[in-house]
Image 1 (cartoon, helix red, strand yellow):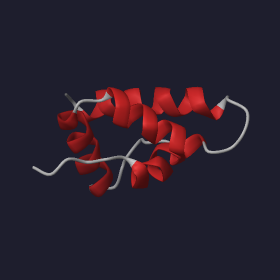
Image 2 (cartoon, one colour):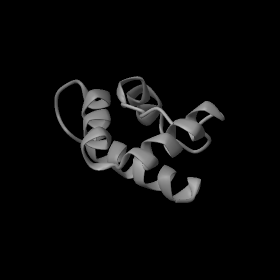
Image 3 (cartoon, rainbow, N blue to C red):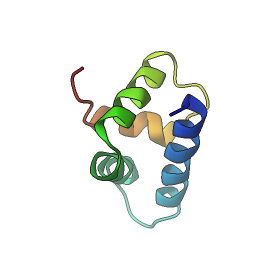
Image 4 (cartoon, helix red, strand yellow):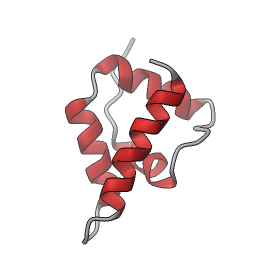
Length: 72
């Protein structure tokens, strides 16, 4: 999947959780990605974040610490 598509999808998830009341939005973003993204997508997201995370919302960057990235 292209980095642009991953960024768009991750940002859509972040946008949704930004609108939800309460706290812990970063944890909710991470949980959603952990639950619904296949391992390869999470690896691609990790590579994008490692390369600087261009285009990702701050909430996605915050959530990244809680995203399970499988080993190669």
